[in-house]
Amino acid sequence: MRPHLLAGFALSLVLVAPLAAQTAPTAPTLDPMTNDKVPSYEWVRPEADYVRREAMVPMRDGKKLFTVIVYRKGTTGGPILLSRSPYNATGHTTRNRSQKIEEILPVMDAPFVNDGYIRVYQDVRGLGKSQGDYVMTRPLRGPLNATKVDHATDAYDTIDWLVKNVPESNGKVGIIGSSYLGFTSLMALFDPHPALKAAVPQSPMVDGWMGDDWFHNGAFRTFGFDYFLGQTVEKGGGAVPSGTGDEYRGYLETGSSGAYARTWGLDKLPGVRKMMEHPAYDSYWQQQAVDKLLAARKLTVPTLVMLGQWDQEDSYGGPAVYKAVKAAQPDAPIMLGIGPWRHSGANYEGSSLGPLKFEGDTALQFRMDWIKPFLDCRVKTNPAPCKAMPAAVTYATGANRWEVDAKWPAGSEMPLYLGANASLSWTRPDTAGSDEYVSDPAKPVPFLPRPIRMEGDAWRTWLVQDQRFVDGRTDVLTYSTPVLDKPVHIKGAPRVDLRAATSGRDSDWVVKLIDVYPDEATATPGMAGYELGIGIEIFRGRYVHGFATPAPLEPGKTYAFGWSLPNVNHVVKPGHRIMVQIQSSLYPLYDRNPQTWVPSIFDAEAKDYAKATQTVRWGGDAASAVYLPVVGD
Image (cartoon, rainbow, N blue to C red; front, side):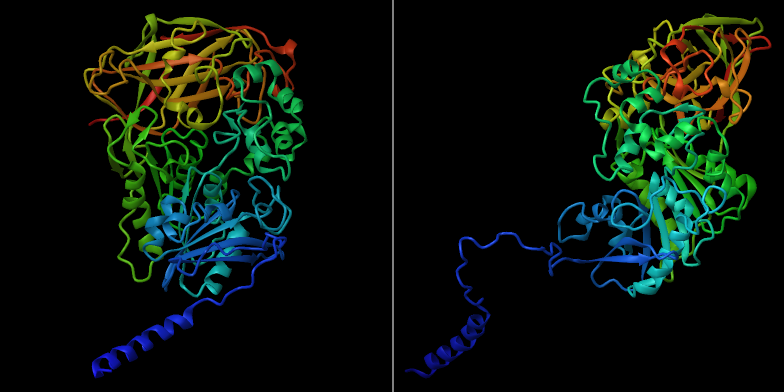
């Protein structure tokens, strides 16, 4: 054989031999009756670009909380970004069964883990795989909680364990989360761990009675029934099993909200019972109000508290925390962020909401331009210096631009007065007058066009629903400005001063502040004549003398009912009109007021519900108005 052929043959033996060595051994043929079930499968494969670890983190009382730690392979000296959740830490870290870190985590996490952050999700005490008892929005240690643990101690113990047991970290921690996770982010600020350097509570649950999930100004929000049944029941939990029909009809046929609870066995749930046992703003609610509790202490952890302008669940809490803390501590390291979003909308795609279109993905813009820099400069190793914190960063809807302000509210109050002939004007009418309507609890005003289901997109976007569906009802009063010849820029929380009377012994009052689009609006297809809610809020009349002291109203007596609409940054453009609608129900989101006196509306019976004539006064000494925080542009 020729020498070069021999050399080639030898080389082929060298190359083939290792391949042969790698061939998998032949397994014996399985018996046809071999059990096909196996105990486990490791879906995170060796080729994954991340590490995902699970741990049971010990708390000071001996209970252990299930915690998932995720980071990109090769991470060293990474800051920790923590979220404490009632919604399943496993689910948060398995969005997709993928080998890519961006795919297993929520979308909003990608910029962080791609920049060396270590992402941590934890099941709160008593839920998911965590040990202990679950108490909805567990109160701080104190009058309502005689134990040694709460969300503040659990956050402290968790952070302490993480910085000692995650060697890939730099020992600095930020906490973030929306809704309930916003609540747990705020709770971490009480007696905070030294390693906690920044907090970003989003749409936080702060005061369940004043204006977050369960009540608004004393009016009960019925959607809470589904939430309690879904979150607090180990077996058989979920939505109330009332079918898929019109919830307007379903609630109406059942009677009071208390009767509804009893019909479906919800009165057996401890969380529902606690709400029904405390219909007024008593110490049970006052001692859980996170804004008041935080204001009573010095805030030391820099905090970016944020929410959506059309947050359908927790519009009250974020601004309430900012206001209370700043009032008690003017130099507190806290700022407010408001975007053009629904509840928790900052964590999703933000280029639109219902029919509204914005300039790009506003949620991504805020995450990258504000949230990430806010965290980076505080939790990274050797970061660039932090920029000065403004009072507020908000998105001006109507003008579609982000704005930064040195104070919040940024506007100065200008009263918009109700007047004769369904008018609104910037000057108080000299002549006094009134308008009337009949409120019938048997025919409450719906909060959405029927049929109503408080779920899905209809629920998420109801605050931007075109209000023409009720404009014209005889139990809805409508007032309007002339067509504007210059913009009206509202920055803050509009304030209602409603002078009104009822023929009944109790009454609900709903005020809607509305941006009315021109009848011809070819530049914004689909928006011609649209009646866009800028702010919608309710007030239960029995609390006119104080939220802790409900009392019957005197029929025919004029009262000054006062409350605030949600915080907004909105520009009403020239060519538009400003409208105010007034009604006495927003059903079935809020339970019906019987309009007679009963100590607790949860216990109202069919005989207690009665029609009432509602009188709204304007002009003179009893001039109803909505005070708008207006800035000059």
